[in-house]
Image (cartoon, rainbow, N blue to C red; front, top):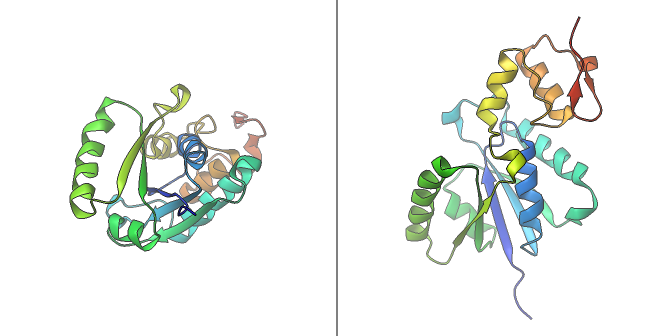
Length: 184
């Protein structure tokens, strides 16, 4: 019997966006198991702690429902990516590409990872059209400036961002369906 194909989708997920969730759902269809690796990455100055990001990603994956069939696992990590991938017995690193500007960086990372761990392959998934412009950095910036981020993240994540930023948008301002009421 063949070994199960385990894939790793690593990232900071600060916060997890609709674009991340799209890649997660699609990557889960390509592998027998998908591990979403949430990186410490203190150099990026995350808005949320590692534990908060892991919990947020788990909650959002649970909200995906049936398509995941329990085959997606979320794990934090604070080591070299290829070491973490090897420790998890994964053979594929999944990376999402939004635009040509992502490609150069991701191409370099894939090359470095290949040198460090030649048995691990990197697979690139193009972001869906509706998510190509979404980045966690832009979501945080929009939220910091009081903008509505519910087009880019779930209502639950929007609540967390608002609370973390002590944003004027209050919990009651978000409504189901990804839209927000204008605060009075």
